[in-house]
Image 1 (tube, rainbow, N blue to C red):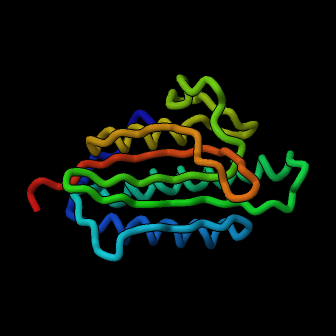
Image 2 (cartoon, rainbow, N blue to C red; image 1 turned 180 degrees about the horizontal axis):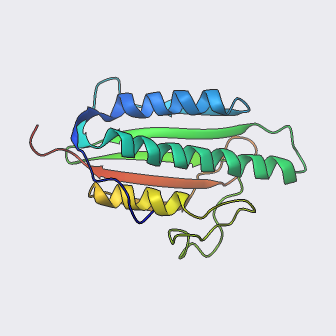
Image 3 (cartoon, one colour; image 1 turned 180 degrees about the vertical axis):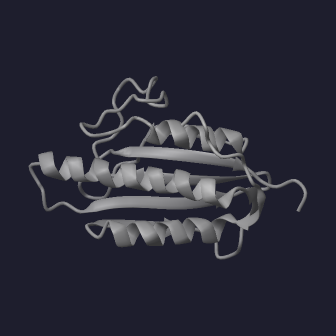
Length: 170
């Protein structure tokens, strides 16, 4: 964690990167439906694609694990596991939002970004700390929120918003 690789930015299509990451995670989590809502056009911004992919992969894996925990402890274990990923493009930033119908965030979220703090039995406590570091090194902002209620079940899980600045020199 202390020796994160140096950023190697170049202009990349964030839209394509998010779609590829979602596709890989969907294949790795067949019991979870991952939906993607994105613009139909490229979103070009200056990022380190490897590090942004790592951050998104960590987030999607955490969401899947949270859903597994809820389904294991639920009175309705046949309920669907859902992750919604969306991209919103504005003139100066892009927001990637990942929401799940897992167990949600704990009431006290203040320490979740600290290294070695975990809410999982077998977690390392590095996932969100790494994600936060990657996003901040890109000049972005990371927010943890409750998700909107999911479908008929009304389950309120976790939501992560990543706001990344758009490239100024395109």
